[in-house]
Image (tube, rainbow, N blue to C red; front, side):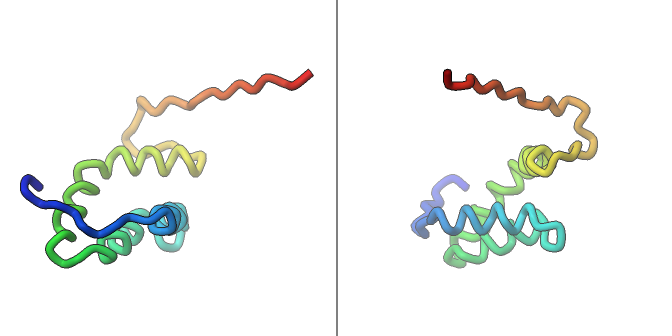
Length: 88
């Protein structure tokens, strides 16, 4: 990845489409990654794919958490607690 400069802009719509595809049970994370990578120029695709490969375990865990599931082989997954103050 050293020496590769990504010129393809990443829009909010691309990120939202990635999330929707990843969370879709019929499509899933691998499809979402492939679809996202395909949006880049040919000489950029390998670098973008490598970034996903380096972060795939975290993406799997985050996706499972977002879907309310436990990630496979991840006993350390902690559930976030959110507290909201009621307006008086």
